[in-house]
Amino acid sequence: MGKRFSTLDIGIDRKNLDAEVDSCMADIGTEATLDKELTKSVADFQQGAILKGRVVRVAGNDIVVDIGYKSEGFIEKTEFESLEALEPGVELEVYLDQIEDSSGLVVLSKKKADRIRGWERVMETYKIGDVVKGKAVRKIKGGLLVDIGVHVFLPASQIDIRRVGDPGDWVGREMECKIIKIDEDRRNIVLSRRKLLEEERDRMKKDLLSTIQKGEVRRGVVKNITDFGAFIDLGGIDGLLHITDMSWGRVQHPSEVLKVDQQVEVKVLDFDPQRERISLGLKQLSPDPWSQVPEKYPIGSKNKGTVVNIMPYGAFVKLEDGVEGLVHVSEMSWTRSIQHPSEVVSQGQQVEVVVLDINRDKQEISLGMKQAEENPWTQVEERYPPGTKIKGKVRNMTTYGAFIELEEGIDGLLHVSDMSWTKKITHPSAMLKKGDEVEAVVLTVDQERKRVALGMKQLSEDPWEKNIPSQFKPGDLVKGEVTKLTSFGAFVEISSDLEGLLHISEMSSGKVEKPEEVVQPGQKLELKILNVDPVERKIGLSLKALQPGGEDSESKPAEVGAEEPKKDA
Image (cartoon, rainbow, N blue to C red):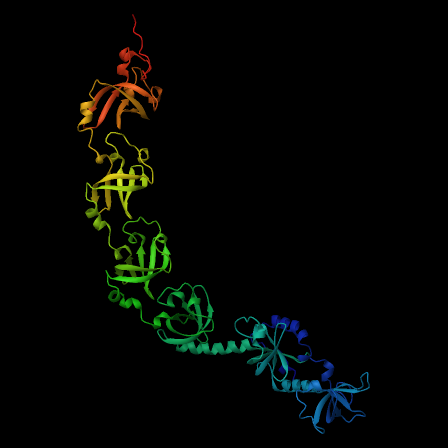
């Protein structure tokens, strides 16, 4: 019988398993191991002997048994599940636990006798490699105790193919296991349910590999879920159901569609027998919604959809499960300059869109939101024909002009050159600030380019056409105030909103490097008009022409109100 109980190599890591069993057996106690003395062949009426006895009576908490000894023996009632069958005269096998205890009584045990007989039957019946059935009765350190007639050990690592969480969840379950180790001396048996499952899986795998075909539908069980998909156990082999093949619609995570241990029907998309890889599909079991897109959503049709994703360049709108279109940021508003789609839409929002284009091969639909509304620019020219006087607020300013809001979404540009007939405006901030309400006149409307040109100076007559040429003539003396300096001279206001240019060359008879060497902003001067050009709208001024000494003089400019220089007698 010795060879039959030697350990058989059946694919289990012997070294690790032995260590696992050794560390756990100490906790099994009398449920799994017995003292060697209990199994010795002993003479009658010696401690440790198994004897036949007959029930005499029930006395208090004990069962009195006649074993043919000079005195009767006692078994505690707690060793029996039921006392109904324990009538006087019933024969029992009992274990002689103590011949005489401290009270001088003979102590017997029915459980220990049954346990020894059970182990003897197990030893005679089973060998390593046999399949046994039993119920998990208790969780212990490192695994479970399984009742196969006696309590044997099932390590946690051998419960299932995949790692189990709490072995206690298996208590009370009937299971089939394979015996992988028998230790006769220590009276313990080690089981493996995992080994049995792996062998069964190998058989199923061979069958699956010989029968599976591309395009067929198979039933499987979801075994694992990852960010990129789910692994489906088809019976011997796991196939990959990628997230993109779960639904025609948008799936953020596979757990939205499947859960572990769920039974599911899938289609075999591809099969590599050499690498034993199977690609599966779930959405392929239902019709592709894109097959009907051109008929259901013709170009130009207006539809309702839900915003499902927002990107910097636009928003994706779901028309139905599996059919989404892109609303580019440029197609969201006729009038607003949108920097990011989130300025207009939010995820989950219901929107109305118009189909602009369909690419069936790429499964792409171009959508527009602004096309679902009337284009306000088609009415701008009718509402604001050239010559119309308007009032509006300064909404924004640039270096070249100010944008005036005519109505919500419609701005007109007031260029710096159209702010004044007579002043040289280099930046709109010289005359306006953001939020100012201004009056202007519509100059032009470019509907195609969506531009409205405005003017402020056009609200009054052009003084260059009548007043200025007749009022200011070359040789006239004028008084003015320096408004600003430039690298080439200074602008001097000689009348309300009328400026002339004092060129740097006309500031002094001597050489002037910079205008600020001679004049400063706000300084009041008397000047001579050199020329008036109605075409170029320029007035040339001179300071040096009024200085005594002519071209050779380097005198400082004469300020208005200063004393006239004395003439020599």
